[in-house]
Image (cartoon, rainbow, N blue to C red; front, side):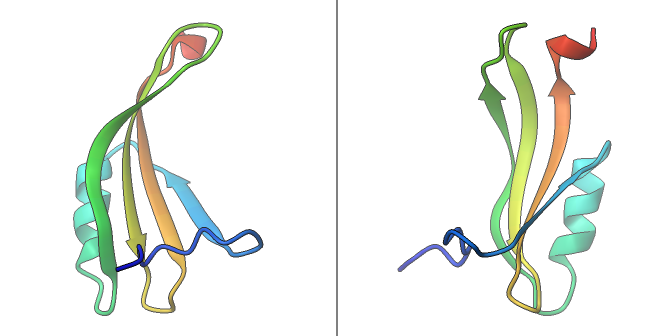
Length: 79
């Protein structure tokens, strides 16, 4: 089955950063009609200053929009 998230070019993906992803994700996942694609998991991204670590989660909201909720765990550019 295809992933319910729609990453087709031209489609909307809402991206939000939070300082408390575990709490925010629980609330978002509990919304009637929301579909969880992936629970929070750590991802690492390279940068010239060093590795950026984030928690990333994905949902589809009741209107069918893809929503990405993130929390930056470590960003060497902010040190």
